Each structure stands twice: as structure tokens, then as C-alpha cells.
Length: 483
Ligand code: GAP
Image (cartoon, rainbow, N blue to C red; front, side, top):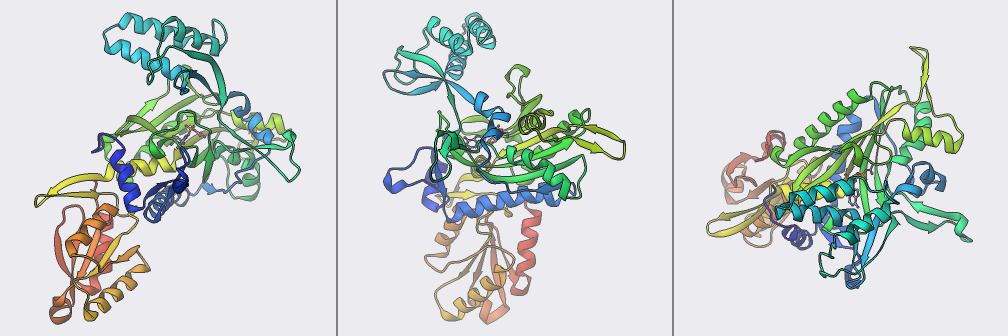
């Protein structure tokens, strides 16, 4: 697990240090929407860059795309989101709280199992697994809740509304004289921008199947259960890649991408013991998926999905072909055959990934009787990589420290800091996750042209010549290991 028993410490640190703020906080905040502060924006950008480099720069058959958030409304009919992107919800009339009906039942089953009522749990699980086969899906869920007298977790009441389907897409009007006919949606995933541009990319780039298209960008979902900080938001960012393959090679490509993606999580410094795969059972697959697995992280709120890897078969291209009337198949010139490619998708939430990095990096240590809070994140991701301090505010030390900071800025993110004791400055940058701090002291100017470099993780300090600082920082980044 991460070193935390709840998300509270991450929420407090994020606010106190300028990683993440509640949106519109001075007006009381907007639920499940967050803003990234000076440190957060850098951390998020570094994660996005690490993903982009991995997916595009390191693969000569993956190209990038930046599709618009607004898309033709037919896209969402074709993708199945208008008809199928729903959650079955039920309201507790007393507390006015809304719950996902299936999750409510799942929680009840878990409680029965915990209480040793295994037979009853299995019986309800069987009913849950077969919802939609007796009456409609919503009616079957309602019946399970009522027949088992499942109570609202928070109020304890047994006073439910019907179960209703709730579409997760945000709808808005397009154009100055917009009517209901001009309704558009804020995209609930970036993937569809890739599918509708598949032909454009194929016709204009030097790619052939198998090839991938990568994209990062905002997505919007009117999540009903939107809690747990940036874990589940209504506006969030996704990093998605669709890999187009010949049918029949899809299973091998799916396995290959699972291996590659878990390797990336380790590469950005996430500890192996906090990562695992969770394949989706065949009866729980999303409407588009032939196979799916989550990369899960052991958050303080339990094992949760950070990334999904999906075999989407030819579902999306076939649907868009049908709805648009445009041919979206592929002609394999070498083998003289025509087919609609299958798609392997890797889809990770950038905000959720940022939360994972913060949770995995967070440590509380005791140092000389004091508590040290430190973010031991990969130096490549650190919002500030190098802190530069003059020991005290004396011009001869300040001038050299400024010069060192300016020289380093070309290659690293740097913060110059001269306020407070050196110990306080270290602590501030420990909390920001800064892996290297350099101090200019009187020996620097009087004796040896050297500075002290202090390493965040073990707090060790050594003297290094000024002209070797760049190399020392580069080596520190290269040699860093998660502990
Ligand atoms: N194109 C496939 C797709 O969107 P998904 O499993 O619904 O699949 C992929 O979403 C990833 O997007 C998730 O693994 C998660 O990291 C992130 N994500 C989804 N909904 C989110 C939300 N409401 N808030 C933050 N991140 C979210």
C-alpha cells in the first residue's frame, strides 16, 4: 500500500503546497472539479510528457493527434454513449443521496460475506449477475434492493426511489440560435477523436497497420458518485492510445500492451508491490470491449483502476462506418487483402495518475525528533528538480547562487530560495518533492569553488565542484531508484 491510511494528507499537502486546489474555492468550490497550482501543473505536465515520450517518441509506428472536445453528435450515437453510457441510480428519499444501484448491492454482498453469511451472499450475487434477464435491468436491480431490504449506507433508511438510468455525458447547446436539435456533448473520452480521424491519419502519415494514434486531452463525465479528490472527477484529462491491428493479431497485441504499460508505471517510479493487473470478467465488459484489464494501484482507498487496457475489436470503426456512411476499412497492399482493423486501447487518467504518483511518493519520517514530510518521486517528474540556496543573504553568496540557478535553468526546473534557515528550506523542498538542493557557502567563495549537494531521499550531502553540478544532477536523475 502507499504510506497513507486515507487521502486526507494528500489533500492537505496539495492545497498547502500548491499542487491541487478545489475549483472556484472562494465560492465554496465546485464538486468534483479541481485546479492545478504551480507545483501541480508542473507535476502533471511532467507525467504527460513522460507518457507522450513513451508512446510516440519511443515507437516509430505511433503518431500523435489533438482532436477537438466538441464532436458531431452522431459520434456519440455511433460509439454507444448516447444509448449505453448510463449508470443505474437509486435515490435515498430521506438523505436525498444518490447511489449506484449495482454498487449498493455489491457492498451489501461484501457485508454478508464478512458476517459469515456466505450462502445468502452467493444467492444475491447470482441475482446480480443475471440482472436484466427477469425484467429490465433497472427493475431487476430495484427488486434485489427491495427484497433484501438493503438500507442506505449513510442514513440507514429504507426509503428508495425507483432505479433510473442516468447518462454520464454533459450536454450543451451549439451556436448562437441553438435549439435542442443543435445539442452537442462534451466528450466523455478522447478515444472517439482518434477513431473519427483514423482515415485522415492513415491517408496523410507514413503509417500502416499495425500502427497507433496517441492523444491527451480533457474528458467530461457527469459522475454521480464523484468523491475521493482527483480520483473521480467531472472534468479530467485522459491519455489514450489506439493501436490498430489486423484481426487475429489482436490478442497478441493486447498481451504486448499490458506488459508495456505496467513496465511504464514502474519506470516512472511507482513501487512494484503497489501495482497489479485486474482482468475484467467477461460478463462485466464495457459495451465496446472484447477483453479488458485494469492496471490497479493500491491507493489508500484500496486497489483501484488507474489505467484500462481494452481490446475494442472492430466495434468503433464498424459503428462509425455505418453511421457516417464512409469506408473505414484498410487495404493491406503487401498481402492484397482488405479488413477493418481491430483496436487495442490503452487509456489512463492523467489526474488519477498524478494522484498515484503523490500517494506513492508520500513519506513521513522522523529526523532528529522532528517529523519530515517528503515526496520521494522520480526526479524526472519532480515539479522543482533543483533548489539553489545561498547559505545566508550576503551579496557574494547570493550572486554565485543566482548564477548557478540561471545556468541550470536551461536543463532543469530550478528554484532559488534564500528565506529561512537552510533546514527550513530543505523541508519546504522535501514537501515539493525536489530531489537535489545546492548550497553556496563561504567555503565556495573562499576555498574550493565547490557547493554542497543534498539528496532528498537519504538526506546525504557531499561537496561537488561548481562545474560538475550539471553532471551530478543528471547522474542523480539517471541513477534514481524507488525505495
Ligand atoms: N476510452 C476508454 C475509457 O475512457 P475508462 O475506463 O472509462 O475507459 C479510462 O477510463 C481511464 O480514465 C480510467 O482508468 C481512469 O484513470 C480515467 N478516468 C475515468 N473516469 C474518470 C473520472 N471521472 N475522473 C478521473 N479519471 C477518470
